[in-house]
Length: 71
Image (tube, rainbow, N blue to C red; front, side, top):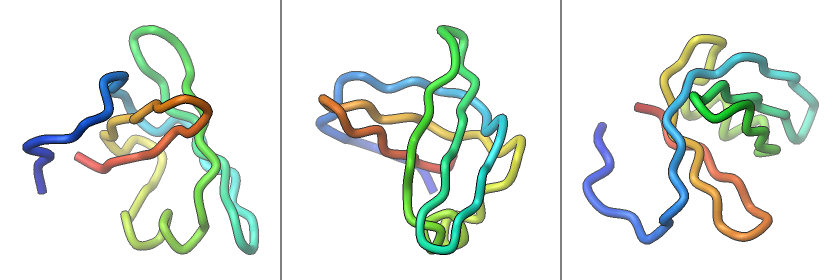
């Protein structure tokens, strides 16, 4: 999978540093060259994306929302 176009300007490539799983939502820490970016996403999305510590991702930041795309 590759991202060909997206309208979010603030994109930070990084690796998943830590996943704190919850029953419904999970906290994902992404280590980027500019520091740690944290996202709270559904645990189902963590599983669907196959996220594990070390996964290459892009943190997409728009206002107060941080989304994750697996590379």
